[in-house]
Image (cartoon, rainbow, N blue to C red; front, side):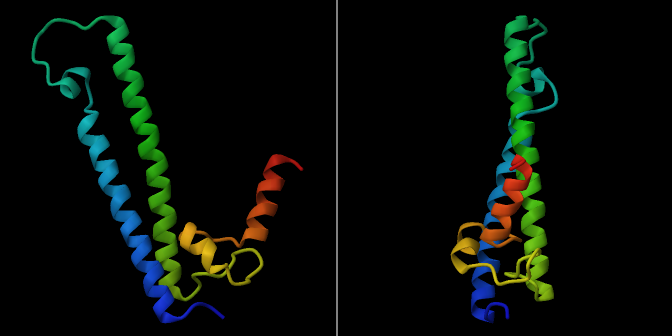
Amino acid sequence: MGYSEKDLRKFEELLLKKRKELLEEMGLYGERYASTVRDSTGDLSSYSYHMADQGTDNMDRELAFMFASKSGRLVYHIDMALKRIKDGTYGLCHTCGEKIAKARLQAVPHARLCIACKSAEEEKKAGR
């Protein structure tokens, strides 16, 4: 048995809020880190930058892209959780089929596994 309609609406609101925050955050990365050093700094001079400055700028952009990629994966997981709300499977563990604890869903609203199954998955990944 899944969660009540009231609970599902609360989880949906939580997911939509988190999704909006992530998309806004990703938008900031896109504006802040333009495609070239010249674009990202707004410097219109034709003088070249010192190699160390260029390296630091490149590293900053790569780091921003990495964060955007992680945020993008999280948006995907949130979208899948929203889909589960619509199809009636939200809050049920994908592995054992048991109800995921409400406290876990409040902490990680896009969770697809209960604590026991998630722990088992992590142990398996760690090779235990």
